[in-house]
Image (cartoon, rainbow, N blue to C red; front, side, top):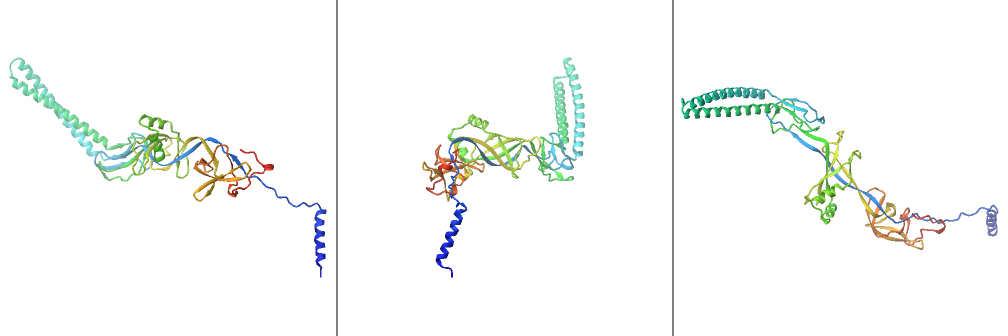
Amino acid sequence: MVTKTFKWALMLSALAGFTACNLDMPEQKNSSFETMTVKKSDIELPYKFSARMKGQNDVTVTPQVSGQLMKICVTEGEQVKKGQTLFIIDSRNAQLELEAAQANLQAALAQENSAKLEYESNKNLFEKKIVSNYMLSNSENSYKQAQAAVAQARAAVNRAKVNLGFCTITATVSGIIGEIPVRVGDQVSPMTQLTMLSGNTTMYAEFSVTEDVVESMVKAGMKGKDVDDYIAQLPAATFVMKSGTEYPHKGRVESLSGVVDAATGSLTSKVSFPNPDGHLYSGIQGTIVMNFAEKGVMVVPQYAVVRLQDKSQVYKVKADSTATAVEVTTADTGNGKDFIVTSGLNEGDVIVTNGANNVTEGMKVLFPEEKKNEE
């Protein structure tokens, strides 16, 4: 049996062997946490608003006359130009009405000519005292009645021409054809909606301005021309579709309604976007993004802020290199990386950034031999 004395001898021999081989034991090293010095800077904050796109001129296309729909000259979603033919209604009745009106006009002109001759004849005879003033007055009245009949006949001809023109329905604006709920052969009337024509050379994105913006305008006492000046100074807007695609052309705020919605406490605003390629359609939903400049704010990385239930805190580095928790209030920058600190810190404070979640109160976070240059 191996004695205890022998076991101790083996252990001492092994220790001596390690020493003889110059094998050093690993030395523990302390590492500093990453820190930054809080400074004020200027930043652009993206404000986002849910919006719905609408054509500059959304026109409901309805016929002006009743009749049978003979031809549909466009298809749904087609891009059309102002004046282009969209629908054709049976024009035979309108053509017959025009011909009848033209015939009535010819008859009225003939009647007018006869009345004129009789009036001029009686006028000459009256000057020679052959006819009485009564006959002259009667012939004059007959001539005036004939002139009025000609005017009425001409109006009937013009009305018939207009009705004939109404049988061909053309685009009043350039734009996109919407749904066409009718078919060739349908009986249509002025109550029938043929389609919706969305004028899309310029599109409007409508959105609601949030209550805090409304309050800031009210506090500033903006009225009349002040609002127009405010709108003119607003930054350009970007339209982002639901798919995340960013529309390449920038928009400008055109209007801000003067009536606050009682239910939402918001104002309705419109942003105009050029649509040269026709890529925007009425009804498209997306997001309006406008970048507003914020000057002299304290910006810190999001990972420097530690969330504790409903509170936010950062770890401030004291003169002795230890950390102390400081409660702060923050606002989101919208870039997914930073927060704006609105209270709790002062310019020049040093805080822990990367690794803040691993810091505890009073913990030493900077070590002189490895202290990094503060930002």
